[in-house]
Image (cartoon, rainbow, N blue to C red; front, side, top):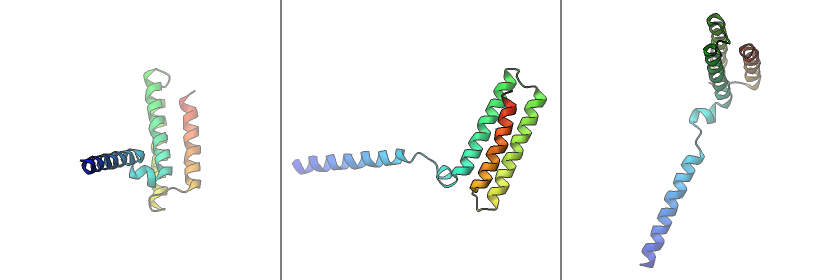
Length: 111
C-alpha cells in the first residue's frame, strides 16, 4: 500500500512538472527563433490598429489612413526582403532602420 501511494505521488508530480514546463515556454517557435522580425511585425500590427482607431474616431481621413497603410506595407516588404538575405533573420542594423521608419509613421498617426 505504501509503495502504491509513493508511486502515485511520484506520477502526479511528474505530470505536474511536465505541465508546468509546457506553459513556461509559451513562446512560439517563430518568437524564439526570429525575435527581431517578431518585434517589427508586432509593431506594424499595433500601428495598423492605431490607424484603424484614429480613422474610426475621425482623426484621420480615408486618404491619410490609406497612405499610412501603404507606408506600413512598404516597411513590411522591406522586412521580408532583408530577412530573405539572412536565412530568415534580421540584423540589428536592419531592425534599427525598420524601427526608425516605424517611428516616423507613428508620429504621423498621433498628430
